[in-house]
Image (cartoon, rainbow, N blue to C red; front, side):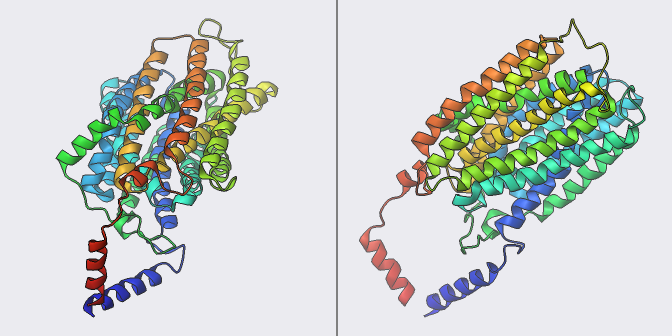
Length: 470
């Protein structure tokens, strides 16, 4: 009888806790909160990076800082999933967010003391923090939502997160409106970024662990028990021989590799200071539109989950080919040796074409990354596995970015950078199709879950039913 009462009490608690989508322990609220954390920290960092050179005219210091950042990010992105499984979301997120404040502060310092040592160290520490934050974010975004609405929740997160880039782009545009060219953005810009990043650090403590999050149907996201160091070390090493992760490597490498080219060699090279800030408002705004569009396709276009995956990848591939083709046409007239005679202002008549291209780059970025996250989310449903998968994705992504920043530092021709970016994204599409074909099932169960499901012996069933009825 006691066990019966316990079961009834648990059921009534679950029913009470699933009345509203806007309750604190719902996936909707928790994914929105992680979106706000990323709005304040990586969202503002993206706005800063999107200006080219972190708002500095001499890009050498920030290129070197970004190389240090993405080198440590590559390591801690892969380790981040294991660290999250040991520490939980609060400590992992707070530690990660605090490093964003330090990095913005180092650029403020560089405005007055142009020695790149502090900026590079802050960049390396930010790489560690970003690895922790994004592994945690990946686990939350892919494991908290119900399996048949992961695309919708990914687009919800991506929209909130990229609103940070939109507002972050407005800050330098407004504060530097009357400075067409300057040595760097002014101090108030960096201080504004630091305030947002500090708020994100505090907000990270509002995130609930997965075993306290209840979906609308009454199911818990996962009954996670935090792991041990030895178990996580073993699991992380096994990722390098996991065929599913190996198929994701080209997409992961490509997904941040193109930022260097787009920010430094399109936005920073073609446009003046205030226009770069305005461009970023629309670049990150385009990401919100792109994530919503691809999220709809991946969740609602067809009843079959695999078919939705195939269609989503095909749409991104076709759009990506068109946009990179437009990028090629835009790139041909200028190079390191043949720079533009004068940088474009948003009031110029020739502004529209390059602006539409830059907007389209933002649209493609969101669609590409949302698509990859959807595929990762379709490979499993528990936060421990998905935190490792997301960490591996971010680690490989960051290794690619570290290489990309050094490619730009060594003055590799703009055209060569564009061709490499286009080729990397193109190679990734058929591999993702193959992954969906082999590992994603139509009944919302992944290959791993089907293999691991074993029938319960009849003796155990009898024991369980007896225990509940006594």
